Image (cartoon, rainbow, N blue to C red):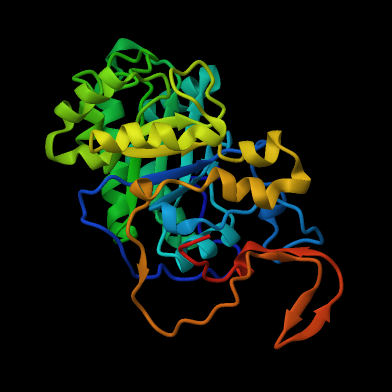
Amino acid sequence: EELLGFEKPLLCTVEPLRDVKRGKPDDPKILFCHDMMGGYLEDRFIQGCDKSDSYRFHHWHLIDSFVYFSHYMVTIPPPGWISAGHKHGVKVLGTFIVESDPGTKILNEIREANLVSKVASQLAHVAAAYKFDGWLINIESEMDKSCGPFLLEFLKAVTTETHRSVPGSLVVWYDSVLLDGKLDWQNELSEKNSCFFDLCDGIFLNYGWTEEMLLKSAAHAGTRKSDVYVGIDVFARNTKYSGGYETFKAVEVARKHGLSSAIFAAGWVYETQDKKEFAANQCRFWDFPERCCPEWRVKTLPLCTSFCQGFGEKLFKAGEVVRSAAWFDLSRQQLQPRDQ
């Protein structure tokens, strides 16, 4: 009801998407899906907060897109994340997710009330109103065997409406439910899920892949290999690859086959490691080998930065202290260097 009734957003300002130079359009990309501690922590405050040790991300040159993830049905990225990403030419996506039995109920309501067009247009309206760049569509609810046409119609409508409302936007499908309504993660691109891939900008594969599966995915994708995002769980839960500080190795495997990567839950650094060493650990985690680093160059002027990461023990302006308390505000993050 809240989605269907959405009209105007809260008043807030975000930075426009900067034009940056990257590699060729079909080069492998990196998507960072930020799922940490339920989401909407200190980053949710539009004006920032009085804390300096919150999670922050500043290796924007490594990634092409950023997904803000939570388990709310409609997850809107906080303005600070949108602005920080846009300053570095990174597209920022929200998440539409339905899960388990409550999700099945929601999908059936949309289907039975013929609300596909309305829901799709509202999702597009939300993205345009809050000035972010698209959606991750995550359907993790089982449906009956006749749901196939509905799922395809829904994904096509969301993609079409979002592209219309937000030029250059992305809609990415998560590898989960199949046309027969069965919740069956494939961990690869195949004939079972390529129908969804064909209707949007990319597919986010589940995390239990093997290199053989990636070979088959690349063959199945053909000229769209870079639109296949290989899911990489930093916690490495039931995976064949290492996570943690060796996450880059899985990225290397994906890139070897021309596939993109979707790094999931890199907040692992903040959640599981010594928070006093967060700055050093964050740089250690994102210290990817050069072969994993895409080309990234700022193309537009003016260029002005103090390399502020969006936090501090004091707030300065023109070299003068204007606030003596600790602070955290991602919207204040400035352009970060490529080499960190």
